[in-house]
Image (cartoon, rainbow, N blue to C red):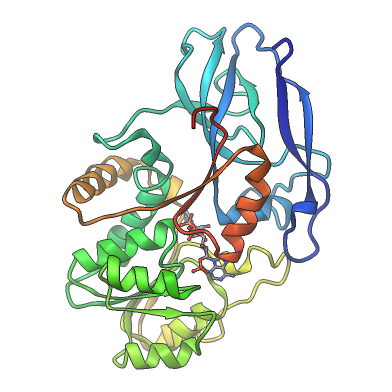
Length: 342
Ligand SMILES: NC(=O)c1ccc[n+]([C@@H]2O[C@H](COP(=O)([O-])OP(=O)(O)OC[C@H]3O[C@@H](n4cnc5c(N)ncnc54)[C@H](OP(=O)(O)O)[C@@H]3O)[C@@H](O)[C@H]2O)c1
């Protein structure tokens, strides 16, 4: 668009260890012009999640690494501000992998697919970026379809104050389980126990996690919902009960380790305790999303499920938001608002 600038974050270098803002460079280019059959999208919100780190490291699930000099990968929601496409109108809210930039064009499928976003089951539209979106579905399906909790089960959850973890904690509590969470600071641990009502929380940065687990779960655990991998997975495997279910959802502690991920050493306990360890990829369970959203919405309305958003403002904040997610300074789903409305 004539005279409109497009602020974009390019990858300047691939981090050797911890990510820093110096790994990115903010550039300003003219906003793209939509051709026939394309729409012009103004990014409203970017969602910043831990696996993004792998886009400039090991490549993650797609194996594709963003080359130096290219636009940083990222997803979010935006508004169609020009439409030359019969299926989209100006004002439509769409989701897509826009990348870390203010303006992008798509023909609906290329260079990235977009989908119209509508509020789900009566919840505010912003919740489609967390509890009423893939993260909520991950918690619901990971817990109910795979871990299959029974009342009285002892459930351990890591990254328990995060988007997925906090929903798993609340669902498991609601299902009559004893729930222990692991999180990275005291504020999060207090929130889990005092606000979400779980039974205990361990600050993994300040304590001997293995010893605390044995104190809080003297009889062991029936379910471990693993969001972080690494040593914490090993501590959990050490205390699984017979027929326990270890659900591998994510491995945030390993996303900055670009090669040589830490693998579990206590896996042999799975053998003689006849336990299972199962991973899952949520987008292979799309047929289960409608039920998950309906139930999650009911539980939000009943006050059973709460959620937090941690919103930074402006395109300049995007790298800081990812660093904050990886260091655990965020409290709730990490979003960056690029909206002009304040
Ligand atoms: N399987 C699937 O299909 C699927 C779908 C969605 C998400 N996931 C995975 O689920 C996990 C949770 O996703 P989310 O979006 O809800 O993220 P999240 O838990 O909200 O992520 C941020 C939190 O991760 C924790 N963290 C960061 N670095 C850590 C480390 N080195 N060790 C332990 N914890 C660390 C931090 O909390 P603390 O302060 O507690 O450290 C941080 O606040 C991620 O691993 C993600 O990749 C998987």
